[in-house]
Image 1 (cartoon, rainbow, N blue to C red):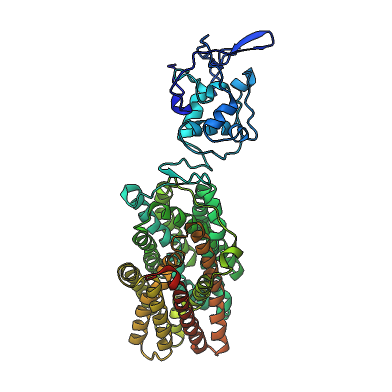
Image 2 (image 1 turned 90 degrees about the horizontal axis):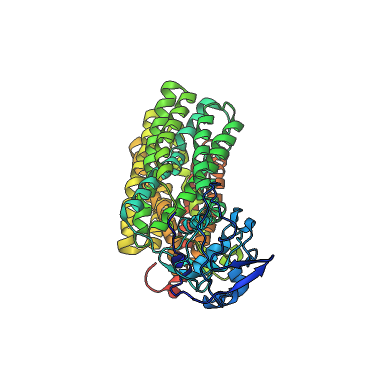
Length: 573
């Protein structure tokens, strides 16, 4: 095997002609050739020996000198569990060891700060800076070099720049290119199979009320749909730290598998408690792991174009609402509930397999350490008002998506096909609105103003819904409501980041906390509205008043957060 110099790892460019020998067990060891004693063998247990040499070693190099040269104390340079072996015994040469110590020395040589990895490795002076550039590397050393260049799980190799103060590094997002836009396309299908599937839940709600569980209170059935949104929002608090620690593939791949298996298992459910556990708990949790992990990784590919990338990716939720609503209605009507659900699970499988192949973490990205929730909220009035406002908005926002079909059949006495047109129209308008409102937000009035305007418009439409007397007017209300409701759905993240501008260390945790509040709002808002329908004797008046008032007050809270923050941030929000 051709000898490979170690100078590109250690950073050495000058050889020291002096030599130092040390007596050990009656023999003389040459420490500039640490593997000249017992022959080193590669990890594949090959019998090929490493070529030895009797060249004079370098003199005067010590662990302390090497550490001082790179700004490290001896303990940091050595590693807590990585004592430097001055005598290369057979165990230190041939036994496979963890590689933290080697990576720290390699990092110091190429100008990277210190590495914080678990494990250790016994090293020899030839791996320290200042040795001859012609020093050949053994097979095991070459393997360590490959691991530095292509590290494993739990570590991200820096690409562009570093923060020398704390050892974290920040690499610039590509903001385009084949890899970045392919992740946007994959995010489209992820949104379709998570939020899109949930936005079609109105079809399932109506079927469960009238066909599978007649006489059951709607407040009990709606827990299935609300828990799905709850899981997709609150799991940011759990999935975020896991993704930061390098477990994205675990969260995403196993979440995708659980999503398919959960959907397929719904076809075997016959009781309400089974549907709540499988379609609500299992499918909802799987949606949360898939959506939360994917959106975190997608945001690392964009900075200046993050708004348009997020809009294009989340547009899949509206498309999924249309596709899954029609698929659920027609397949269940023609083939029955079990085979209709299996058809939906097949759509999920076909669209998610390519996504799991394409979606990857971007090398070189690392999130800053998160802060405690108490620190985030205390003393931050705009943030507290924003959290309260988003909670109130989402407390009543999904009432229209979940109960529009039931209202059309119970109050307006429309047929099943006409009722389906309502939910399809709402989702189609929602798709168009995501694009238009995103452009308005980015080019004209900003995300906070756009969200406030659409929230107040949504509340107004809910109040107008009370006076609907004809199918055409109901269809118009459904179309307009689907359009303006997209403002809160697609601009929530951008609005929160607008309030935490230039604060990258806390922006992520703040978004996660507000998403958790939104999840709790959806989880409780649906059953509360359903209970108000029961209290009203089957009339929707109380539920409509609750939904409209909640959205309106929430919009005012967000506007108050804007006023409180404007003086600090300057300019528009």
